Amino acid sequence: RWPHGQMASGTRRHHVAIVTAARRAAETTRERVLDAAQAMARLILVTKVELGVDTAPSPHSTSQELR
Image (cartoon, rainbow, N blue to C red; front, side, top):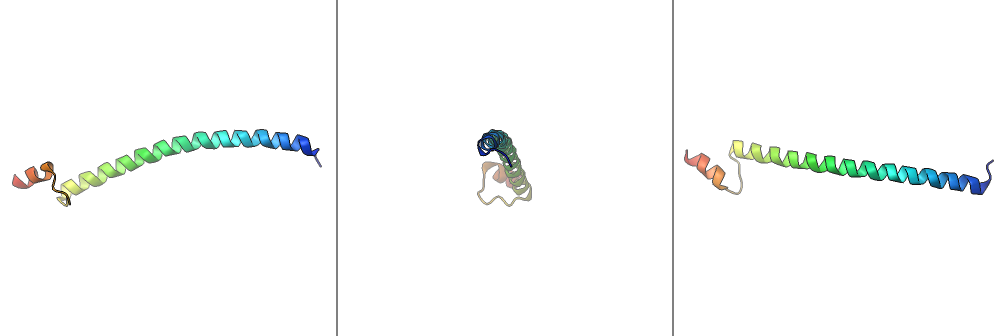
């Protein structure tokens, strides 16, 4: 169908474009995932403090209990 050499060079160029796009997408996704993880951790921490189920008694939770 196609001359083999021509097809290979075209495919390689296409592959490089895909890899570049994928790498860029992966970097953005990693940043989003980290942001989401931090937000989740903050949410869990706030919920724990509000419910008073802090496993490690921090100065903040003890001051709340004394009040």
